[in-house]
Length: 296
Image 1 (tube, rainbow, N blue to C red):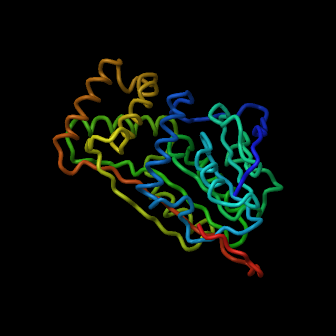
Image 2 (cartoon, rainbow, N blue to C red):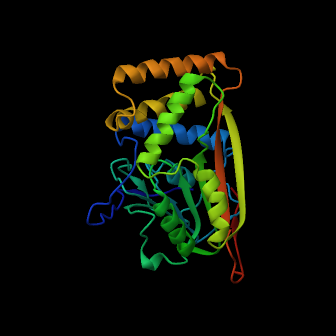
Image 3 (cartoon, helix red, strand yellow):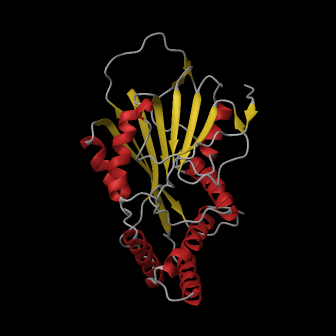
């Protein structure tokens, strides 16, 4: 299916949107996010872009919150006809692609404040890796907004890492994850968001709540980009935040801790970190007829 391409319409929302995001927004982060999407889609989501048990149909609309580079939206655009409308929102526009297909829009928005006219508009809302961007109150408001903008019977799917309270790998790994949890906590972020989603979604009116969890090895396997590489890049990207908040005193302390942690990973046969997709459905109110299904 051919798509026309155009420059994205970026809706700037004044005043500037406050963010608690603890990762950078530069060229290296664009590369990391795109490779991360590729690996997690393949390894965690079984190669599926739409993990929720649903089918997209002509005329449906899809929203991605925290779209980042928009790689998930653009990948879905390649897999579906242009009669499906795809919207990606993010508080930071610097990662957006310069040209997009005609059925794709990228807007500067926060999931906590979606337009009134979006009520019951989207068949699917996708959200990935906002553990580093939303406070507990923002998660609560964001889930309320997602519920509002979903059509009856629509689905939300969230992919997030599982941050362990204890790793049983070694003292340096324990120290690094302790610093990570403190960094999240100091910014009002939720380190156990997978558990929180599993509890909160049913209370907010969602049904058919499911969690799909995959554990990926962090051993070095010789590939140019693997889960091990992803984890290394993740901690390196967090270094400025760890230093700025004085959780680590210097770059030298960070580098020493990082290298000691990676050695523990090499020496441990069980080193692995888990990722979860939590998905849920907005309760049906009526049944739509004459559906033409697009199998993905």
